[in-house]
Amino acid sequence: MPREVEPSNNERAFILEALRENIRLDGRALDAFRNIELSFGDEYGVADVQLGETRVLARISAAVTAPFPDRKFDGIFTVTTELSPMASPAFEVGRQTETETLLSRLLEVALRRSSALSTESLCLLAGQQVWSLTATCHVLSHCGNLLDACNIAVLAALQHCRIPDVTVKGEDVIVHSIEERNPVPLAMLHHPLCVTMALFQGGEKVIVDATVKEQQCSEGEVVVTANKYGEVVQIAKLGGVAADALVLLNCVDLAVAKVTELDTVIAKALEQDARARDVGGLVAELRAENER
Image 1 (cartoon, one colour):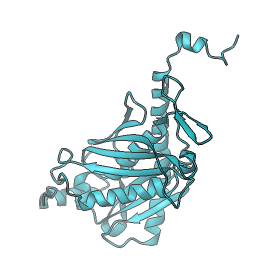
Image 2 (cartoon, one colour):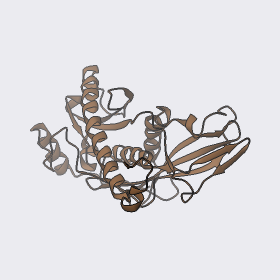
Image 3 (cartoon, one colour):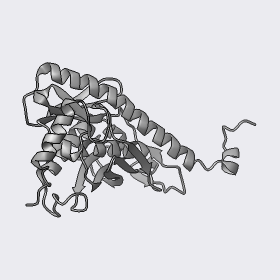
């Protein structure tokens, strides 16, 4: 089974010595993210995120289906990840790696189990028809911190997504095309974002958004998922050295501050996309709410 190329002893010693002096190889501060570029596709529900050299494409697909028997009033929302050899030679087609399993599990907790999306709003006809949404993460390039990049991509795609408007008459459900009616946005309850931190020196030194080399040299990782209101969704300690309770509390404080920054980045990208899609001109003049 292929594996990531491990750093040499000299590389490892150089990275660790630099971190002891609070220096990172790319010149960032210990608590700084790499440059984030977020763009959206021509279709609604497609988000492309570049976190440094890590790149993820998220797509939201929707279909009308029957609900689960024990959840008659709730729609269906699932998150899947696809890691191909194009992203890293450590990934194989048709074989789920430990990285992919862990990534899917953490995204599931962060986005679905935290009720970021109101599944009740996806119900069309109780017990008969609901919307089934699938968020698919395609990892195009893996250069460290996949979880945060995937989380940003899926959350941005959900906020950008629009589903067809629906009319319910008795037991008949009519799904309107885009030409007939404007599609409607999803009902988001909150915006949880993951912040992954790598631990060094027995947990005394913490860095944010580690690269592949830094992750391989780290003694463990802590993932904190929270929203901009400071509400913590999950704290995951991913193996490695034991972390003191005070270290975890510091990680939570750092993550909450970073979540606010990430949420602002997504909001600005959505605003820019909305401006670009605004047709304006004659259509804007004919709007009913336009001043006479």
